[in-house]
Image (tube, rainbow, N blue to C red; front, side):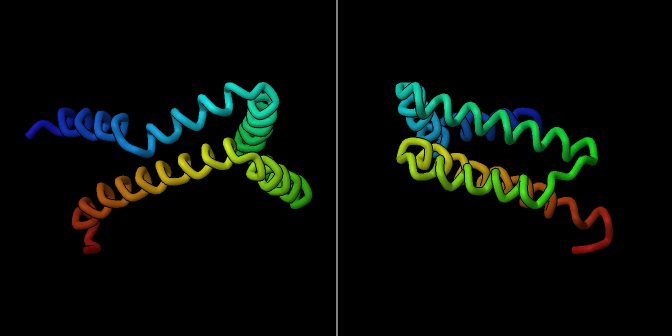
Length: 113
């Protein structure tokens, strides 16, 4: 058994999954509406900025985090953006589950089964 072949099979399964199809369809709807696209792009940029700062040890203030949460809530009122967020969340759960399966399979190496 070649682990790399299995990894490529998994990648193909992910690409062909309903979750990825849902993300693609939702992105097309968002992209078709310039205002929705602009709002989403602005949010993603702010989100990336906050994540970069956090990786550099600069934690955002509670006020800044609250502002991001409120912005997320406002964006979620847009049906197409909410569809996108929901589809991304479902794909994220799958990736987390796969990661856990892989990690759990190696626990015996570290003496905790």
